[in-house]
Amino acid sequence: MQNSCSENFDALNSKVLTCKKCAELAQLRKTSVHGVGAVNARIIIIGDFPREDGAESTGIPFTSDASGELIRKLISDSSLTLENDIYLTYLVKCNPRKKVSAAEGEKISFIEPTEEHKNNCISHLSREITITTPHLLITLGLETSKYILKYFFSIEKDVKDMKDLHMKLFENPSFKLVPFFTPHDVTVNNKISLEQYTEDFQKLSGFLKIV
Image (cartoon, rainbow, N blue to C red; front, top):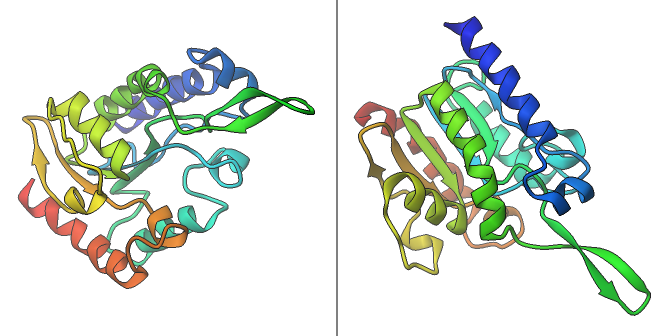
């Protein structure tokens, strides 16, 4: 089973790296970023997209910036491991950007992921879930959580504050989902303290006892 899963991931990762569904992103990206971690993960942690100065620069999820390193430190300090328990990935596998006109000419500008970006990428995430068969999804951030709740749970949440979703448990017949503040909300946006974020992250493994 382990070898079969690894082979499936090799094929999927190749598709992610060569994906051109979003034609402009395929032209402008440094690289797309596929997931890493346990091939039979009990938990999948899903971020929004790889940051330009972080995962996009390394090709490895949640690396090379403060937010990514925070997630990895919290995993390292927990009883869970990337080797046996957790798989890390993104909803949108490329850093979103586009060409815009400026006074000095055309330039490349960062943008938030569009609905088209998410719709084009969701098949990759669906395949990751199919291969790993997780018990629990941890979705990081408001927009990522709302999109995945709608896509996999047929639940539409008209909420504008992540506080209304953070640490809530949702379930379907295949797996459970717990929305969670993005690490950017700690390191950049100051929406939740590091102490509270750490405490809540430590509670996540407890959800495995009820899934």
